[in-house]
Image (cartoon, rainbow, N blue to C red; front, side, top):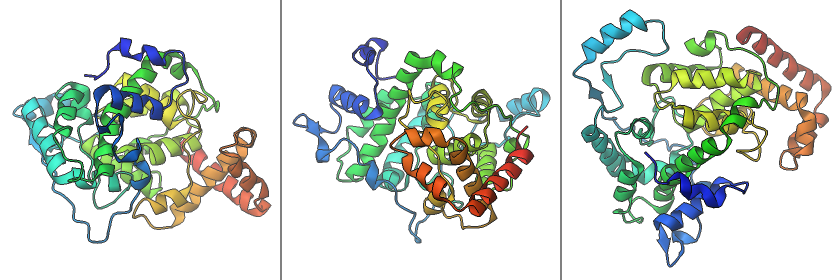
Amino acid sequence: MFLLQENDYAIFQNKKVQLASFYSNIRKKLNILIENGNPLGGKWSFDGENRKRLPKDYSKLIQPTFKSPFYKDIKKLIDTYFKSHFGEINENIIFPFNQKDTQKNLTFFIQKKLSHFGDYEDFISTDDEFINHSLLSAPLNMGLITPEDIVNELKKIDYKDPGLNNLEGFTRQVIGWREFIRFMNLKNYDHFHKNNFFNHKKKLTKDWYEGSTNIPILDDTIMSLKKYGYVHHIPRLMVISNLMNLSGIAPKEVYKWFMECFIDSSDWVMTPNVFGMGLFSDGGIFATKPYLCGSNYLLKMSNYKKDEWSIIFDGLYWSFIYKHKDYFKSNHRLSMMYHSVIKMEKSKLDSHIKNARNFIQQYTS
């Protein structure tokens, strides 16, 4: 299931470890994308190159689908016992059921997607829910393929073929991010579940399960999730987690929602990702700052257009900044947000707060 044994984490135990140092250590240990002891290309991460918009001539790939021979029996079971649960029943699904088909998925990814994986990995498109993502998280977490299997295939690739930024970006997801998440879970599990840094207490209404919040980028994400059990990391982080945080949803309520809705959910992976990365409810053990945004980031990194939803989104964002202005003032990395909200015209700030209050009153309890 993992590349590292628990005793491999000993060197990190008494340190405040960030992904960058953790990842570079693993790269050296496994000798992946290393040349003469140094990172290939002169740097450990090419993440800065991986924030491109989809080009206008982008052509969507047809993702392989798989059908279980037990589909009818499973459908009958679900209809009988789990009819009210989140999700749809589809005969052909995007996730494989066995090792052979999982290997086919990996081969498809390497041959068809890897050459642009990094380029567009952060983009959200209404025309392509998956873009160039591998869809290997669920098979990995279920044990249908191991990270070692994937690494062995990646080692066969000449980085010039897919481009170093694409190969490194995917490598970082598998050997860096996934292993780091496990380490953070083992080290800080109790702290993640106990803390509530922003003291959020709201509950989700049914709209967060039905996709009826009247924020299109959120509702479309929920509907995709309902259909596939999956959306990639940016909708998870910058749409769902972000909006739940801005709306003051209690951390355990958010955790429960993620565990219920994602096919790749497991306690070990959702605990650090939700409490640490998504919500910052741990107070900064995991991340150095909360991942928050208004509509501008999503307008830049998606094909959604500015509309009424962006006004609501910005209201939630600036209302949150204002409510927690003392924290933002104290964090030098975020002090610009504090100064922006303090200098904002009162009428504009009042409008943001009103829009946020209206949304929160309607879509939380």
